[in-house]
Length: 124
Image (cartoon, rainbow, N blue to C red; front, side):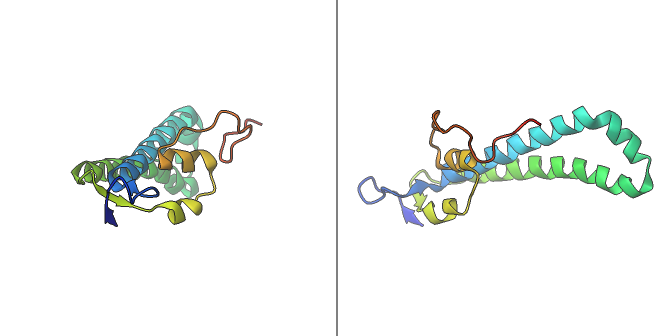
C-alpha cells in the first residue's frame, strides 16, 4: 500500500474505490439472489417440504443474507478509508476471468465493442 500521489501512482488505485466496487458487487449479487428466490418461490416451496432439499433451500436464503451483510460491511469500511490510500491492484485483477467484473472493479467503463463478454448471461 502506498499513499496516493499523482505523479508516481499511474497504476495505483485508491483502496476506497476498490472496496466500494467490491461492496457494490456483493450488493448486486444479493439483489440477484433475492430475485432468483422470488422467481423460483413456487418450486422452492415444494422442495422445502422435501426433507432432503430443505437444507439447500435454506442455504439460498442464507446466501442472500450473507451477501447483504458483506456488502454493508465492505461499503462501511471503504467509507472510513482516506482518499489517498492506494494500491497497485493489477496482479489481483489479472486473476479475475470475468471481463465485465474486471472492468467494474477497475472502475472503468465496459467497452461497447467487445461482442460476447466473459461472464455475460446467456439465455438457452
